[in-house]
Amino acid sequence: MNKTDFYRDARRDLPGPLAGLRVLEACTTWAGPMCTSLLADMGADVIKTELPEGEVIRSLPPFLPHSEPPLPIPHATLNRNKRSLSLDLRTPDGRDIFLQLAAQVDIVVQNFRPGTMDKWGVGYEAVRSVKPDIIYVSISGFGQFGPDHDRAGYDTLAQALSGFMALNGEPDGGPVRAATAFGDDLAGLHGALSALAAVYHHRQTGEGQHIDVSLLDSVLFQSNGFLTLGALGIPNPRLGNESPFAFPANVYACNDGYIRVAIVLDSHWKVLVRLLNRPELADDPEYATLSKRMNHREEVNAMIAAWCAARSSAEAIAQCLNAGLATAPIRTYEQAAHDPHVLARDMLQDTPQANGVTIPITGPAAKFSRTPTRVRSGAPAVGAHDEEILDTLGLTATDIDQLRHKGVIVRKR
Image 1 (cartoon, one colour):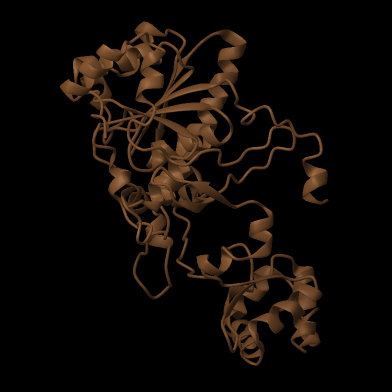
Image 2 (cartoon, helix red, strand yellow):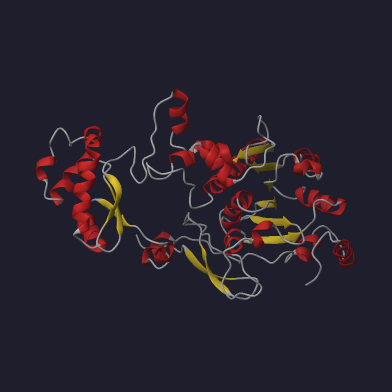
C-alpha cells in the first residue's frame, strides 16, 4: 500500500480523531506533558497552564544551537499542538481561573506530587465541586495511595525501584538506566489511554472519575512478566544485548559497524546456519530448538561474530534479508533521521517555533486513515494564548491587566 491509498478517505476538516475533546493541563517536565501531548496530537484542545516564568522543561537542554531566545528541544517536542495559559495556581486568582476553566473541559491532567494540587485548591475534590463529571488524571512517581505515595518521584527512581535498572546493562557490568525517560513515557502513555477509557465510560454513564497513574506501576506493568518471576523467586539474569525469548539474538560487529541479528523461530535457525555454511547444525538435536541452542551461547555467538567480521554491515544485512531473516544495523539517531522510510512515515515534520525558526519535530506514531494527525503548531511561548483563553471566561482587558500586575499571569513581553 502506498501513502496516497492509505489516506484516500481522509478528512481535512478535523485536527484528529479527538476533535472536540477539551483538556486542561497542569503539568511539568515529562510524564504529564507526554500524556497531554498524545491527546493534543490526536486533535484534543489542550490548554497548558504553567507558572508565568514557565515550567521546568523550558530550561532543560539540549537547546537548538544559535537560537535566540534559546529553544529547548524537549519543550519543542512535548508541548506542540497545545495552547499556553500562564497562571500561578498558588494564588487565589490563579485557583479561581483554573476552576472556571475546569468547569468547561472534559479532562484535567496534573503530575505534581500528591497533595500539591489539593493544597492549591485545585485537587480532584475541588474540581469535582465545579464539574461533577470531570475526568481527573493524576500522574506521580508512586501514586495517590500506598506507603510511599508522598515521596518525590522521578523517571530514574522508577527505573531503579522497579528492577529495570538491575536487568539493564552488560552481564558483567553494573546497572544502567534507559537512555530515554522510559518511566515518564510509559506513565504518559498509560495516562492518555486511561483518560480515553474514562471518556468512553462517561459517554455510557455520564460519570466522571479520578485516575491514578504512577511511574513505578507503569514500568512494572511493562516489565514483560518479570515482576511475576520475582514474586515466584524464578532467576532472571541480566543478559545485556541477548534475549531470554530468542537465540541467537545479539549485536555483532561487522568490519564497518554493528548489526542486530534476532532468531526467534526454530525455522529461521535452519536458514541462518545454511547462510553461515554450517548446514549440519540445522537439524542437530543439540541446536535445532531454542532451549537446546541456549546451552551453546558462546559457540553460536562466536560463529556468527566470525561471519559478520568478514563482511560490511550492508553486505551482512543484505544477505540476511534476502534469506528472510530479521536483522538491522545499529544506527545513531542522526542516521535514523535521514532514513527514507522514517521520512516517508512523516516521523519528522518541519514546524515553525515561537522564536521564528523552523525545525523538524518528531511526528505522531499512530496513523489514522480517516482523521489524520500531524504537528499542527509549534510549542507556544509562555502565556501565548492568555488573552484568547481568559476572554472565554468573560474577563475584560482591564481584568487581564490587573492579573498581569499582580503576577498571576505573565507580564506582556
